[in-house]
Structures are given as C-alpha cells and as structure tokens.
Length: 296
Ligand SMILES: [Zn+2]
Image (cartoon, rainbow, N blue to C red):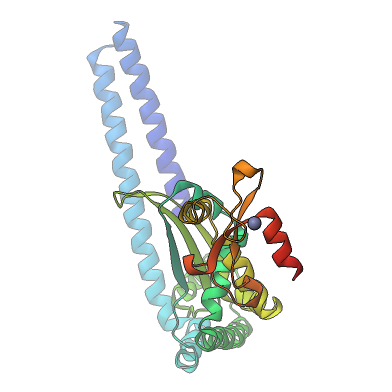
C-alpha cells in the first residue's frame, strides 16, 4: 500500500515539474500567461504536500502495524524467547582491528602497496601474540556455531515465510529484533604515506579475516613468514642509507662500483636464521663477497 502511495506521489511531482517547466518555457517565449505559472506552482506545491503526507501516513501505518504485531505475532514472541536464551551465550567482541604502517617516503609506500606485504605484516602481528589472537578466533568460532543454532531455531519458528502484507511487516519487525553477534573478525592493514610535515598524503587499506591470517601463520613454516617480512623491510630508503653509511664500498674487500662491482645490502645474521632488518644487522657487500657468503 505505502509503495503505491510513494510511486503515485513521485509521479505527481514529476508531472507538476514538467507542467511548470513547460509553462515557464512558454512564458519565456511570451505565449503563456502568468495564470499558467500560478497553476503550475500550485500543482507542484500540492504534489509535494501530498508526497510528504503519504510518507507520514505510511510511517504511521508501519508503527501501528509493528505495535499490533508485537502483541499478536507468534514468530516475534518466539524470537524474543530465543533472544533471551542466546543473548548471554554470545561473546561480545570487536569486529575488526586496524594496524597502520606509516611510510615517510613515497617509494617505500609504493613498494608496500600489495597483498603480500599486508599479509606478511599481519602474520607477524598475529604471531607476536598468538595466544590472544587464537582466543579471539576461538570465541568468534563459538559465536558462529551458536549463531547457526539460533538462526535455525528462528527459521524453524516460521521466520522465512513471506506472502501477505502483514507477514512482510512481521518480517521487518523481526529483522530489527534479531541478535547480530560477531561471527567474523577482520584484520586491516593500512599502508599510509605521511609527508614530512606530518600530513597524510595517501593511504591504502587491505582487509583479511583473522581466520585467514591464522591459517597462513599455521601453514607457513614459522621462519618463512618472518623471512618474507624482514626482506620486505629492506626498502629503497634503507638500502641507500646503508650504502651511504658504508661509504659505497664492500665491507669485506673494499671494492666499489667504480671497480665494476655491483653492491648489495646484506643481512649479517641471515633472516632465515632469525636476523632482523635493522641497521646494525645490515652491511654493504659486493656481488662476489655476497655470493661467497652464500656458499659457506
Ligand atoms: Zn667484496
């Protein structure tokens, strides 16, 4: 019913607007009288008024219907019973957590704009506090199981029927009353580029479910996730800083790019053996010394 009111009101307003435009158009050409314009405006105002009245009426009708259903609907009564039974069952949890990584250099920011870096970063975060994250995941999983039970009881009460006008109101009322526990936890990685004056230049978000990250942590053998992460931390900015610190020459043999040597930045304690990406664990090597180190 309220849909019909809405549609006819919109059509009325359109017609009035059309009439108004035509009248003004003709008036512009000198063919319409001021009488036409007055008539157009009147029709427009009337149609707007009708539309507002229709909406008020429909809102009133919905409220009356909801009031009636709250007293008479069996499904609604059953839902209230279920809510009472389940409310204390569900864990109250946050739905997500956001981790922001700040880059001050544009090239670093760009090099971090990919799923792989985001996943590696989140894996390290999760791994650093496995107990807490595992517990959150367990609670979310518990909510999911309980929620399925809750919903199947609700559906068994006849929740998915929908035929009459009354039933569609009933469904809306119930939908507003349904419990919505947290059944999925998301981890967000935000890669943010901060200008030297502290202003945010640009940011990009990556979203993964906690379950996804946890299973990656479990699947990836423990060192590999952090290996990837530690390698990803050797950004162009870090590389040039280390090269500069070491005077642009190999710390083993002293050769430079002028000697035709390609210089690389190397982890003194390899990342595969738990070495971290920090200046004290980085050194400049020439290509040959680096290869020699790898063969040891
Ligand atoms: Zn060398």
